[in-house]
Length: 353
Image (cartoon, rainbow, N blue to C red):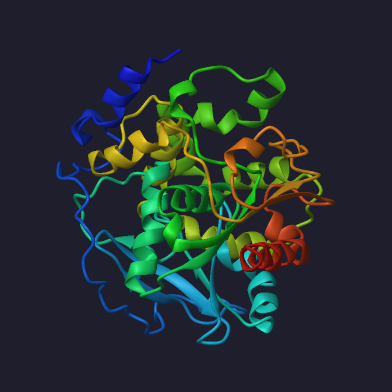
């Protein structure tokens, strides 16, 4: 087992220790500043996806974040967060309009390394670690001057929401998290799981090798197709849905961010020093105190459904858990009505407090 001391040293190591990305500045994250004015003009790069409206951009200190927004201007904010290797357009094409009809204002950002989201500087560490994803969410809210919002997501997006809800609860009015508590406990990252679970995580280990990096670089679509089939074995996605998502993977930072994400979560690669303080907080496996609804897909091919009792202790506010029939890992795209209903439910839990 990797020791807590050794893990902390790894988390604070300099970016020069890894060839995963360019050199990172050694300074910590800056303190809160006045939020920059968002760039709300539609993008003119590439075709505009149907359903969620034009791609817009919000600028943070590190990123130019591409996003969509759907719903009434003064509706209650909801951040809909996509996973890997999936598309925010596919995942939320039905969820966002359904919530908009209920009066919610939906913001659907693209993860770092995906679609038109870009790093603003060439020398920024292309990190995919969990603290970076959580901080991106808060920085995105700052850029758009969103003081508080509901967070709802799955996979990488669910983890971003969990991290942000745990570390910045004052910014979160409620959380929908597919597969429960997704904050990675890096202190036990090298403890084995049951072989039946490890089998589903095959790409975690593949990506720790240079062979895996080259495999992702050469055939991003082929690898993603395997993940889609295995993680959602009952989902009959169309070739048009897959092709729409595949456009996101041409991002120049995609390979670096994905590879670093999986190497960092297995504690075999150091993190970006700018997130070291946040990662130390996450070592304590912080509680999520905001109202929460957790969902498990009954047909998830990588994380078997549960009754939620295994992670219930991590949610100390109002909490509900549901198993969703005929849903795999990309639950909002496979069962959009159930996901939208969970957002409305967690909102009502917050209103009842």
